[in-house]
Amino acid sequence: LEGDELVSQKREANPFQELNYNQEGYQLELLGVDTKVDQAVYVVQVTKPSGDKQTEYYGVESSLLVMTLVTIETQNGAVTDEKTMFDYKEIEGIKFASRVKQVAGPQVMDLNVESIEVNKTIEDSVFNIE
Image (tube, rainbow, N blue to C red; front, side):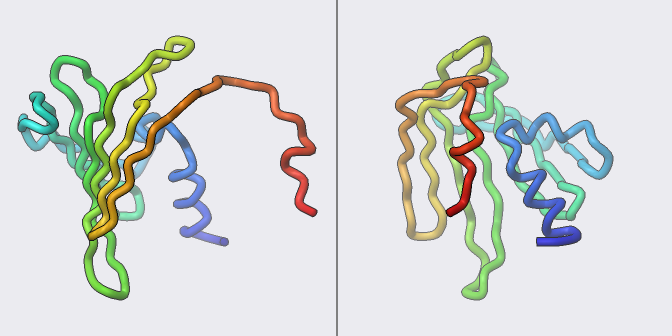
């Protein structure tokens, strides 16, 4: 990977991508208030430095990310990727979704988080490639 693709991959690898939004090149637009997953949500359109756009939905009462929608161009045409976050749990002062439902075209994945460890020490040997 090099150039713009490398920069984009590094940006996407951040588990808290919202922390990037104050960096140059991001644009945020509040589109209004809607209802998703039985709750009132703020609808925010995020334009990334690459020009890619996604729509994010934040709970009006909780301020937590409830859903993201992004349209991805594939060789078979446009596919909408929808992620819905459920059951936030606080771990060491940070709230994490313990369940994520992802729908991309005909594929549906329901991801359940069993445990989260924050700032756990990991031996360097774990990253060795043999």
